[in-house]
Amino acid sequence: MKREVENKDELGPEYDLTQLLKEGIQGKYAQRYEESTNLVLLAPDVASAFPNEEAVNEALRTVIRLASIPTIRAQT
Image (cartoon, rainbow, N blue to C red; front, top):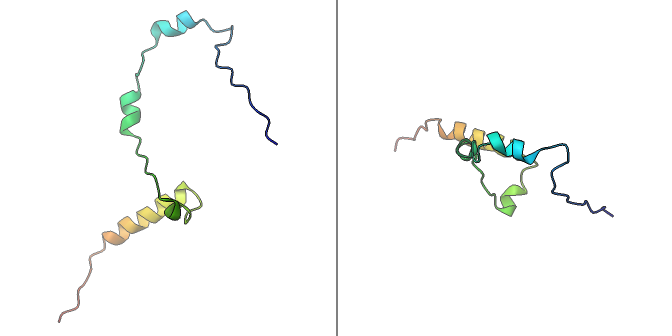
């Protein structure tokens, strides 16, 4: 049985909150974070086909490579 972890969301006594907030800039990296984040939610049946995110990425890279191969159509 899992032991419940106590969520103590308090700043330790060794930190001075006024000093921490003095030079901090709220949202300093927010735009950079948003630009580099691209999450895609997979349908459960699709997700079950992959063991991890690297397998998904490798499969998508393969699809991209295959899509770039020119096709030769048979002449009729």
